Length: 153
Image (cartoon, rainbow, N blue to C red; front, side, top):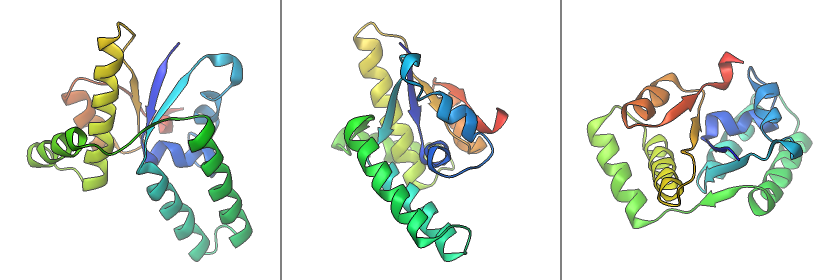
């Protein structure tokens, strides 16, 4: 079983067609045995991206509503969701002091690090951090995570 942590820039590709969408969707194949981990705040960022595309006229209001409903079911039924804790908040603050990260990116990276620590403490394989943001991926590598960029697929 492989654990993947998807940040918002990767997760949105499941819901809206972009470069890397086919590869992201392949991670969700029922027979893959993959487990998908996301930060709880990723839902806000994905809906923000969907709403921006709706405002810009790239998708309809109905499509945006359908994405929100589907994503809600996925967060409830499919994803391992990491909530915001004091430990994650503290680590995110450390990350923004050390690296040029946006706040939400730091929270998602701290959530991935927390998840990775839990996996390795349970003698499971480390997770793979997936993001489309190259700067975020560089920081993830610097803090010891294995990474993948869906835009390379």
